Length: 118
View 1: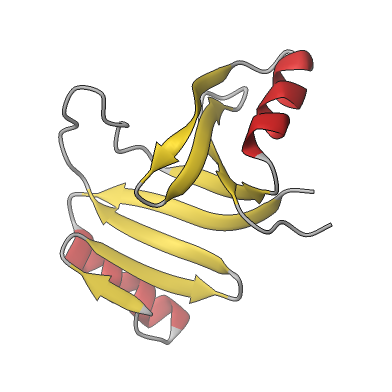
View 2: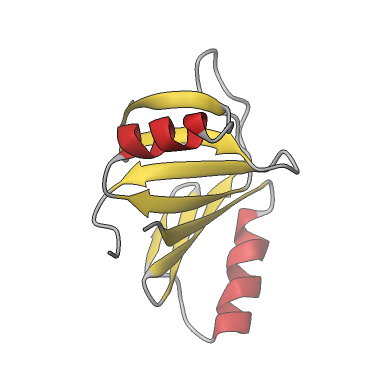
């Protein structure tokens, strides 16, 4: 089973977004560092990123949902066999082992390795 673990939002207005979500949620970010803020919504992170111009080979700064799966490779194989195109095959990043695909509306979806609910 897949578990929604992150809602990622990219913005050129990070400080304003942090203020907005702090007012909306009634709490300060759990993490605030240069270019990012993370609000915890139960077990799900609202991850706010400052927009950036990607360097060659970097992922684009696109809003996306991230789902934790126990086995990224197996999840990608299962999705591919169901006709879903995996846009960025599984690989290691500094935040973990992830793969990326798009939903029918073209929105980016991340699958990240971790402990998923069974």
